[in-house]
Length: 89
Image 1 (spheres, one colour):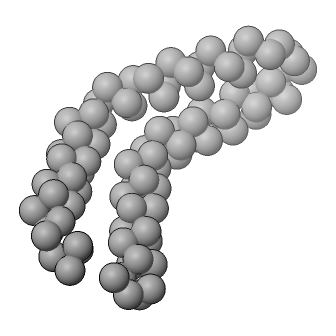
Image 2: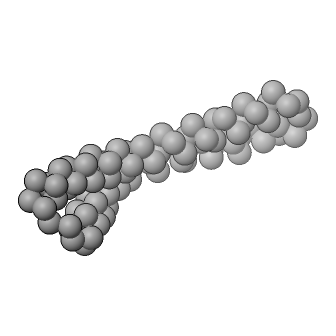
């Protein structure tokens, strides 16, 4: 194994992790900003008002994106296991 191979392998794993987490993080960010704007406009500073909508929206996005996430993870794992003999050399 060369250092370039290890770096490339780690880069691919990190890219997959970021790509899989992006939908949930993006929706959490948008919902958080919207709730913060509403809180600033109404001067309501309740902590649960911020937390509950984010949790619910992230959970809904997770349910919607779950088939896509599993497809990406299965494809990555399949490629990893099929190319394992080449990685050992």
